[in-house]
Image (cartoon, rainbow, N blue to C red):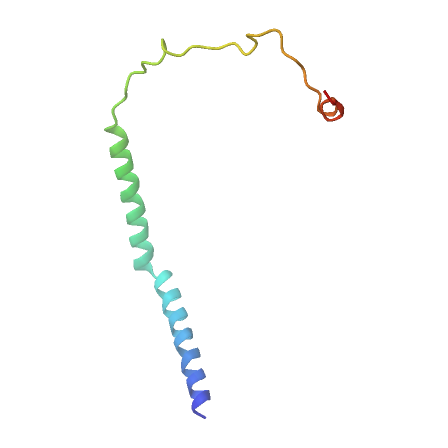
Length: 87
């Protein structure tokens, strides 16, 4: 008998937890608070974006482009020839 009461008690606690969680989540106050916080964060991002400093790029002269074909005498390797070659 005590075991059944214990299980019933656990099930009721779980039920109430889920019920009150869903009730709070879908309440008007929570929806208003979440919307206000999202709009406030968006406003802060826009303010910080306006205050950003732009740095001048000084890497235009530094970058050197290297050719990939510097050496014309490349030995071509074939995978199957390397396996059968016994040199």
